[in-house]
Amino acid sequence: MANPQFFKISSQNVVLPDTETLQAAVITVDVHTGKIVDIERGTTNHLPQDDIHVIDVGAKFVLPGLVDAHVHLNEPGRTGWEGFWTGTRAAISGGVTTVVDMPLNSIPPTTTLENFHVKRTSAEGQCWTDVAFWGGAIPGNQKDLKPLIAAGVKGFKCYLIESGVEEFPRVDEHDLRRHLEQLQGEPTVLLFHAELEDHQCSTKEALPLDPTHYETFLSSRPDTLEVNAISFITRLQEEYPSLRYHIVHLSSASALPTIRAAKSRGLKLTVETCFHYLCLSSDMIPNGHPEFKCCPPIRDESNRELLWQALMDGTIGSVVSDHSPCDIMGAWGGISSLGLGLSLLWTEGRRRGITINQIISWVSQKTAEHAGLSETKGSIAVGHDADLVIWDPEAEFKVSTESLHFKNKLSAFEGMTLHGVVLQTFLRGSLVYDGVKGNFDPRGPRGKLL
Image 1 (cartoon, one colour):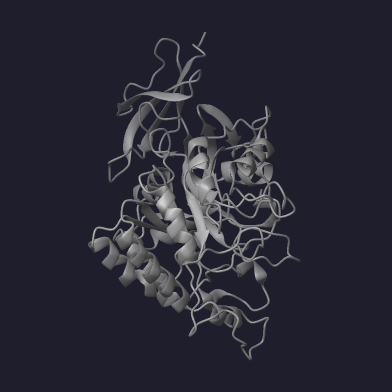
Image 2 (spheres, helix red, strand yellow; image 1 turned 45 degrees about the vertical axis):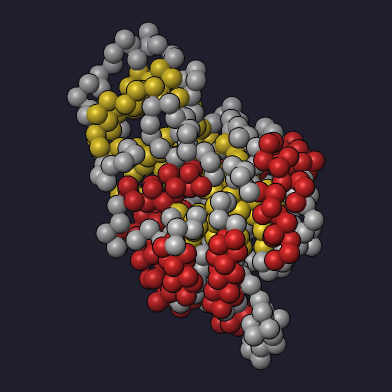
């Protein structure tokens, strides 16, 4: 009789840390602890030992679970848009085993300790993935930051432009200085929605263009907004250099020279971009389709190519979903993609000679590091959580409403044929999604709040 405490996964193609190519390996998992306890290179010793069950997946890939460090789950308060149950269920189906929830658009936002407890209570028992949380930096809440750090939030997001929801106002330079004084020396990070208006560039300028045309929306959020913001952020960081700053959802390649200059000066600046900026361009977007609307916007094809170059040379370190859906009547600015990201990057990346090891670095290892989770998440390593994905790189599927597991079945990627399919997802050693059978763990959500 098989020992129920352990099992092994054997594959000819495993993504292991600090390797540039796929490796043959056998991974041993302790079901009781949910941890990886051994990794044997090669697959010659994969036959049952001590009656331990072996799952031999042959040439199929074994990947670490993805860590999506930018997700809006919107609960409590705006669960008509998304929620913990539906959002994390969509994530686990796409090999995402950890999400980090943004402090908005929930009501209340995660800007005080009391609000954080409300959000955690709302999430209890609903999460198919493990979930960590970002806090928010808004005017007047600087005294709330240290208690939130002590309670476990991974960092703080702020807006330099109006967020679109009244309970999460933007910060100005005076606000930021007060926040930075509180955060110096703390084990945290400050995240910036990097768009900044000035007297020469504003989103409120009247534009004599058809409001149903994508070009009208694009012209209302020009590159200048991102360049202004990142120039301001890097100047401020010169004065407060001990804290890491992070640019969320970089869209504009025009800001890359400023980012490279800041990095060359030794500033602790990290940058993410999103699946939609790498896989879509404004030339592809039809008029009258709000599912393509996001802030900052999807820009032209030449911009997209420059983002890919910046990702490959390390200027941009990670890729996230910024899953931020709503109902169609709300026409909120956000792209829905939870569950699709790995296939999107693989489909687009293969055309550029990108390897699966590079992709995993961007969507698992670097995102885990960014969210302060790299001791247990983001890599297949002894002592890490056994968050594992069995993946078929050659299978393909067409994105349809039936294939989407998030709440509102509307996505900018609908109709696209993507390569790479999740066959199974394990969360801390438990099989929680079986894509072959098309079902989720019948025991229900098993995710933890981190």
